[in-house]
Length: 177
Image (cartoon, rainbow, N blue to C red; front, side, top):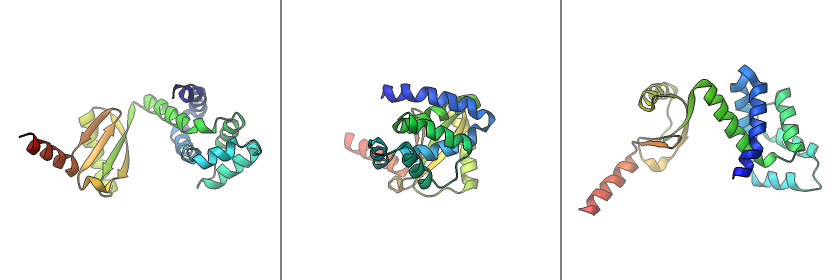
């Protein structure tokens, strides 16, 4: 969807410039807003001609768990007033990319069959940063179907050490013989 990306870019860049050194805090509330805006029912409600921008703003702020700072409220009002609520997830993605580029870091998703405690995650982060030769922002997601081990996705690179992947390799090797 190049159109959404094109629409989102100026919002993400302006928000990034306005956030300055508080980009991490901005990213937190922006991600929360983006997850709410990704809901199809909310977007249908917002697109209804009888719904006012103030009603949409009240609904979104009522759904999120944290209270928004003034900058976040102003940003949300601007997005809603301009009819760009559907672009909010893309705005968050582009904002995160700008923040990561400034920090020289990359987002990485670690899929694990079991929860990973903070000490193990810190150790894993060091190992993965050496393996991928870059600073990583780790996010852990549970996938019980992996059986054991982890699967790490950094951009378009994948490191799969899960039991499921090993079983698939064994299956392929046994059926190919």
